[in-house]
Image (tube, rainbow, N blue to C red; front, top):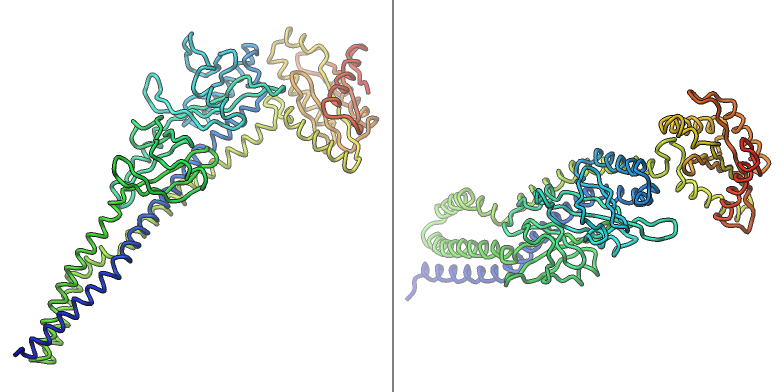
Length: 526
């Protein structure tokens, strides 16, 4: 016959193990989802942080390349004079000084020539045969996806981004490119963040070619194991794939500005490892508690009431101090996620904010440079054409008249030949100043090219524009240019009319200027 103590013990023990079984059946799926959710959050956060950093890192290069690809002097440099080529190289040098992370800025042309600052090019070098040139032509009119290669002398890994140079006829005449060092990015990608030893990030192009990878042996190679179709259809998400027999969990994000894909991966087994450890410890702990509880309840019910309650209280207190705190640290790693979240916030709020501020300043500066002539600070040809198109549209809608004035310095070649190019530059800047002093606030003066200037006169008839042009001509004729005997200008005036396009308008005003020159110069023809 079993004693009551034994019956209570057996019943308590059986009930405890039954509850343990229920706990394991319910707890394991919850723990499984929890561990995977924790891993996915880590992968997603790290991917987003790196994506923002890479966007900030390369956006400035995209702005510079886009600006230089539209620069008239850069486009025409392959057939320009040595002086004009030096001006282009000076522009490259200035950008290099603005951003030291730029390794090289260079332009290759269809005649296989190469324009590059502070680099000796081998005689057999052919620009059109280089990978960066072919990649840019292939990606035209967009910026290329980049070519990764080791520098010939230092073996430093570089990435080349390029864009085609297109002349006014729509013909590709060359490629402008920037080489940037990958060393700083590789250092960041090699850092181990978070609790996962197998986690790492890398960047590929849409065809699977590796751009950035913590293991340099992968750079420039294609990874055939990746689900590229998934990357192309969705801007970001989670995928699972196998590499060398190891199942990987990955979170990816497309970098739209660069046409790259950023991927952060971790071994699936490492995500499951905490689950197995935690489950094993919980089974041992709950089993021990079940056995102890069965024995303790039976002892308490059969012999004492108060004393066993005190023992239970002391034991539970001992468990909370000796086991629960360490176990809580293992079971509830929210603190660790909190630490990661703080680190991510710190990185996003400090480093990225700093990069964004720098990028904003650079963008504003580049926008100014893109619209202005470097010498005179007037609007350039590109900006004026843009404004002329707006005026034509305004005329077609509201029939508001406008005129344009084309000026040319008489015998400007004589000034350069007799006084030098520095004096010629002085004349151009001084003439620009005189024009602005004698124009209305609504008029838009621009340097058209060389010694030619164009003025857009909104809401102005041809007659009013002629008087305005004549006032400027007289101001120039009466102005004393330092070191020059006499300076005059000739000009043509044309009013826009319905039925002609922009090229025809420019052709007509050029013909008026030609008549002024042919009739003896120093006059305005309308």
